[in-house]
Length: 466
Image 1 (cartoon, rainbow, N blue to C red):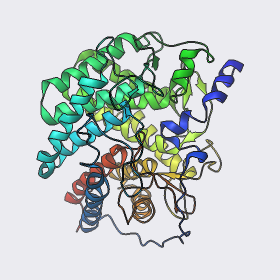
Image 2: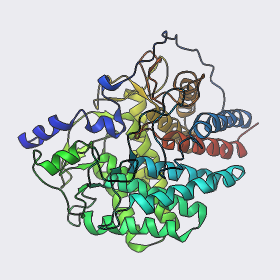
Image 3: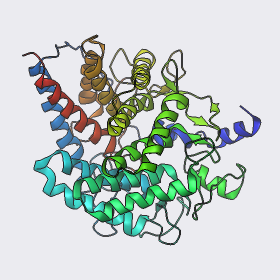
Image 4: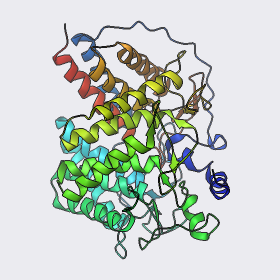
């Protein structure tokens, strides 16, 4: 790592990866005082129709009781528009952090997805999806320069700590939410918004030379490449992204949002960008033996750091999902890399004592961050069952890990008293953070995982032995 890169890395490392979903600074944690728990024995069951349906009933109940039932309708902000983010353990509202593009896009998307995939809830969630699009279009979209703001205050005004800059991580989730809302509502306004978002970032941020996207932009769409100690660079870096560098996290979520948009808009440029992103994620960001570098120079030279197990298992799913959307079947290279990502996370980031995936660690050796974060556990649940669906005839490893993971989530990550998921769990599997909602903690990871897992279990049951 060059001296300039090291200086930049040192300045933003605490805020950076942790705010992106890799964890939270220890000083910011709210401890929940509970006695440590003993590991719970597990008796593994066979992949039969009865057992698949039993698990499906449990995950569907968790979806409705611990995700949808606690987030909605209380998160809907009928005063200022959009969605309110901040809640304590008992779901009382806490001091607002403002309206964050990532949270607004994620909540719009999950409402839309529920309306599409749960017909009995459609009448309840379609209005919520429309509510989300109205905010993304009417407030979050910059009417002067285009693009979605990184964040605004509750009154819809530019303010600190968000500033007036644009960041592709946030824009990606706004596109994701708008495209999902169009799929649910068939409202042309939602599709037009997603298309505008895609065209804006493709015009201003696509890297025609190296592929992928520049991530930090000024309000007018100019790429921010300043020195790390410049005022504009400071502003963007404090949002959690290193200025002048590309990140794994932004690019896997661009892959995700472009996949969602391509489902409803078969545009040729969009298809090319989706295929480019898939290749970048699989062949540049992911490396053997199944890990991902987190940050890169603009020319895709990796900057070494710890491996994030949660992003590994999430990306295994996102790559295969992108190929499903492209409609060309799974490339053996993609399946191989997806499997390596999950296998490596199981080999190095898995808790053999309690179940669950740890936060982060080196490519080889013991994990260094032993906390367990709600989104990592839910993405792990989703990826393990996906691997079982693909490789279950060859091995029982993934189905056994899925069972252990679900047991851990039920007993340690879900709050049995107030419902919802604890944000962070200690290595001994007791809660360490009682936050139920924040601008970085929405209903998206857990909602998507439980939707996917329930539907996949029911699909597996159709062809399973009794």
